[in-house]
Length: 71
Ligand SMILES: [Zn+2]
Image (cartoon, rainbow, N blue to C red; front, side, top):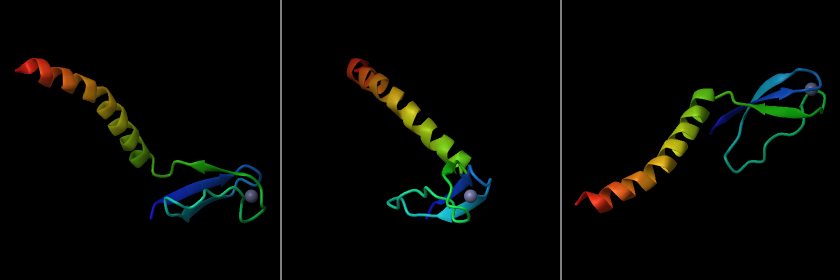
């Protein structure tokens, strides 16, 4: 289960919630009911995910060209 970190913009309450991928993100602070924003608590995980996606996306067309003209 991924762990999400939220920060309440109203009372500055930072808290972590364990949610499944299919769970809707929290919108309200459990303390004051104010609006919360999601923080990237697993920064490394998110960065790696993005990096993997972008490099893979860029790599695919090149690899296709290389293999077709290679032999
Ligand atoms: Zn709050």
